[in-house]
Length: 304
Image 1 (cartoon, rainbow, N blue to C red):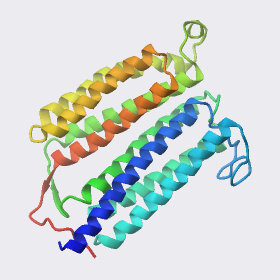
Image 2 (image 1 turned 30 degrees about the vertical axis):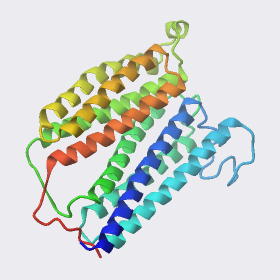
Image 3 (image 1 turned 120 degrees about the vertical axis):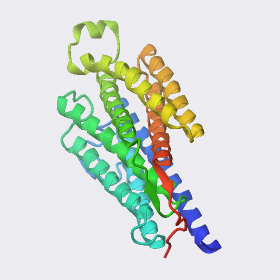
């Protein structure tokens, strides 16, 4: 690969990492929308807000919701640019093209799910089972989006062709499912914390399923989190730095989870908890890719 080609790859990789980071911020802002009950800030209108392209209002819920929609639109444009750029500099069949394409698919699904929540009024004080299910699905798709973006950024600086190792895939698949399940139950628990704030008096009179399910996320976090940490420690023999990063993040996340319960889930603590969930997932994706792939003799990037 000559200097010009290397510069193209370097610039693309930087843009891919920036796009990933920006999407994490958009996800956190989306959590703020839910935690502050601002999901109905634009009314049951989509893509317009209160029937306007740019709403002129001082209502804080509308400002928060509109800001999230605007930032999500920018995220969509960034991913679209990532796909176009990938198809311009990488040859057909390159795995970066595949990862970028999946990133576009998942972010479109994100937009459709977000639109569905608004149009079907599964926002604000809605405490239906339908909302809980959609919220969980939303989180799973968010993880898949972050995973695809992580692959896009990571693979752009890796070898053009890799050979997948057959061993150990089962354990990583179980670890992946464990993290997704944890994320989904965490999303449902966070919804319950928003709609039914933790207080002794309220819990005594509330038997809503979101309150009853609240106990399951911490229990699963202990067992599934320990399982993922154990797998990372046992399998990451030749990738100790990534392994310890993942295990350390899981340990810190467990502490934050305890703090979240003790502080009765304030908004700022929910945001930190979600941020570390996203970081754990991103590091897990990088770690799994590093362990499960091995470089092929052909290492040059096939560029146009």
